Length: 209
Image (tube, rainbow, N blue to C red; front, top):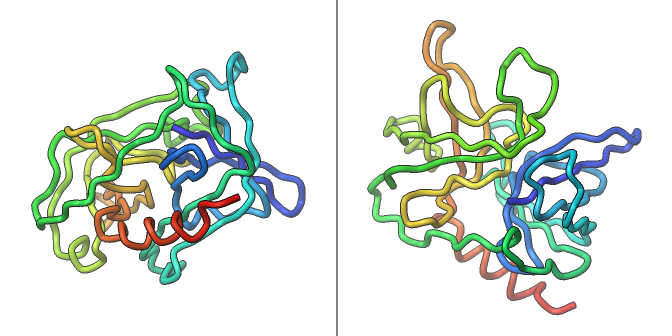
């Protein structure tokens, strides 16, 4: 897991989640746009800076067909300015490449986003929540995974991985909305298997320092 610090034009700071594809690249959501970024690796408790690697981001590669209004293809790759050092707390996540139309089972999302909708602050500790993917027409049409209910990613969790039973990343946390005021929250995740060719191409073309 990567905690992404986003620096804005006016010197402000916000956060997104992300995850390592290898020692050079981080995957996150395309809507996590910023003027510049610092990737924090090996974080569990935000206040404990022991053993944390802080690496600035050198290049950003939002998906070429990212649609900001509809949040379609909400996926982005960031190239780190120096290599991540893998250890017990820092490693990459393998990507799921099969998309046979069936929904993966037993998935979870993690991040430092707000764990209470009324809170203004991010969580100090890395949190994880299990989600069950649901099948509906809207999600199929947008080529995204969806889950419903009270439990799901919160604000600040965007860009984090949707990891399923085989330990691979299937999706990138994108957004949440209510289809109607009394209905449940619907959380959406950009499908990684639909984008593996694009991912490989970016890494291959930009892999050399």
